[in-house]
Image (cartoon, rainbow, N blue to C red):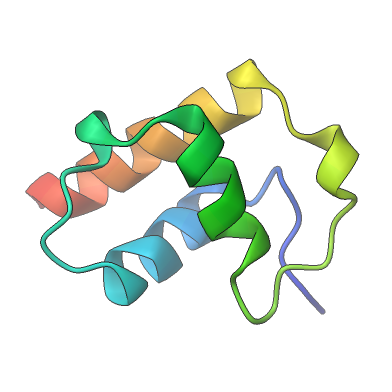
Length: 67
């Protein structure tokens, strides 16, 4: 089963692995959205993303990045 927009923690882990060393707090939402859509097992509707969802992913990624 593929990733959906609401899988923010798992998406954050995948982004941390795919883009090591990138501080997620410096990433624009437009880039973040493209990077999520580019994950190999992402299978949700691209139109369902929004600022709230992207912010949740960014915050989860920041926690992974700092941890």
